[in-house]
Amino acid sequence: MLSRSIRLCLRLGMYLSFALLAIGIMLYLWQDGEAGSVLGPLEALEAMLRGEAMGFISAGILVLIATPLAGVLAALAVFAYAREWNFVGVSLAVLAVVALAILMKVFA
Amino acid sequence: MEIVVALGIILFAVAAGLLGALLGLGGGIIIVPALTLVFGYPMQEAIGASLVAVIATSTGSASYYVEEGVSNVRLGLLLGIVTSLGGLIGAIIAVYVDQYLLAGLFALMLLYTAYYMIRNRETVSICPAGACGRFDLTCSYDDGNGAEKVEYGARNLGKGMSGSLVGGVESGMLGVGGGVVNVPVMRLWMGVPLRAACATSNYMIGITALAGALVYYQFGLISAVLAAVVALGVFLGALMGSRLSKRLQGKTLKVVFSIVLVSVAGLMFLKAAGVIA
Image 1 (cartoon, rainbow over the protein chains, first blue to last red):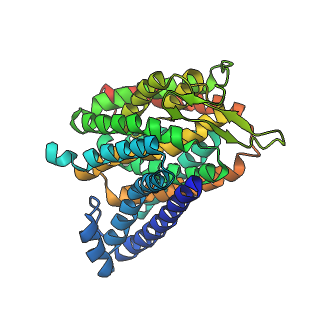
Image 2: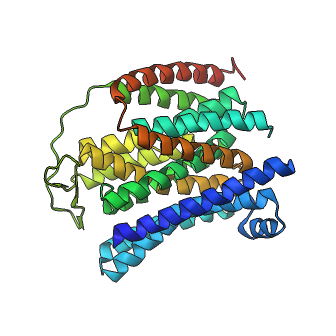
């Protein structure tokens, strides 16, 4: 169950991100768009709805970055279901480090 | 980005994914020098794109290894606590450190990688199945040669975690996966079989690079188009490499690749010294 859940998360994330990246790059070349940093999640969604390349590219990168995180969340759920509390703690510790990374700009 | 540049970067990224899959390395050791030396990108921007590529490599290969049961997910998560913390620390250092110093450190890491690839592998006893302190890290996998399943545990958890922290810092600071540190730590110190150590490292590098990539993202150091082009190329290369790996002899490839790494390390030292832009 653990392997199946993690594999499912990784596969879904992989296919979704690469579809978004491929569409984004094709649009970028077609629209002759401008390059820039990765947009935030809401900005990326809005840009996607407007059919802009940067929206698809940013969404693809954000989905790709979020994929290992989804794998850890899936592991957490499986460990909690199986009452493996020490590994629930391990998964939560990994998530705490990720949360720290997300809040890093605030601390910096 | 011009289409010619994009095609050039894709070619390097495909090569990185291909060699990464063939030699069990992340693509960062090719991508970062290619982006800085050939295409003139600053070190931080190259590292940001490389971290995204490492996640792409890990996602693709780990989904296969986890399915096959070769990746030890429990061990990967346990070591992932310290590798992600190391990735976070390394990324923060890299954001503030001079890019010439980063180039020098990268060159040293390339030399170590070249040594790691050609050295003779020591014979290590595999840790028998059983609990390691409070954690039961016992795992088994099918070796594919018709024999019984290989069952193993892990020992020296504290030592393994401190070694993995170094791998994490290396990943976040230099934009690589950290496998050249993680695999020997698991194999030599913790008694994990080589195949399981490589597969578990493949799973871990995604979690490690995630922490570093989040820092780079928040500081606006991930160039969207560059990261997308690199990730697509690495993905294609990794797909090709995983199919070729059963047909190619790795030993000659490792020697040739080690020579290439030493040459690139020389160029990175010249960049660190400011001799080349």
